[in-house]
Image (cartoon, rainbow, N blue to C red):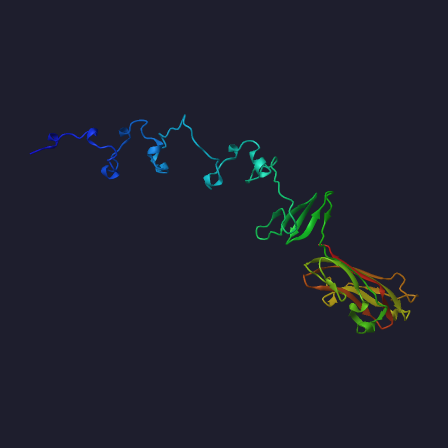
Length: 314
């Protein structure tokens, strides 16, 4: 019986050139020592046929070889790469970012800076992530604090602070003489729009019909003055005056703060005029107005010689 040794061995001369196909070679049959050094050329392999996983990183030596490269791009760097600051050349971050960023808690920021565009009221330089119209804006040499596109605070180049939307009003009367019966008779009454007020105001349309309505909660300062005449020319023509809140008299410690005028006079005209000043706390939506107590219908005020003003102080 014939055995393996009795067959003639097949050498390379017995194989016709180009006749050995892929199917004729078993998997993992060709090892590195079967390939003659220098015989496996680029032309022998299709493009992209050798993946990175086929290289042993401990033995892959490219020293002395020419490597074609491209610049590192954002996608080449992992989010968890944690590249340290000392890997950046001196000045590289300042050149590309417009300044050396203060990027971590405890960082020495004595030499750090942040360069941002000037911005606008609708898009401040540094703004809220939820409202682009709220933040800080650099307007020339001025710094502005913007809320919902409105400039709340501005500090100019001299360090002067302005509040362009501060709440204030000043109103001047235009009417002639007014007696108690012009406002409903004697007792405590409100000086409503019967004075014919003309108004200049800021921070909203908060004054109308003789009333100021607080747009926000806070302390407000008010002043009123008028030109008065006591027809009785004796104490019976006296009157009280105050600044009231929500149709009543402002109460401080359970008392009604007010002055008494024309109680004792030798002149029909109150010599020093009538003036009243009062500060009060108001909630948003509450209103303030001038309140007068008439003893009788013999005292009168002149609207065209009257003014009423107020502003938020805190």
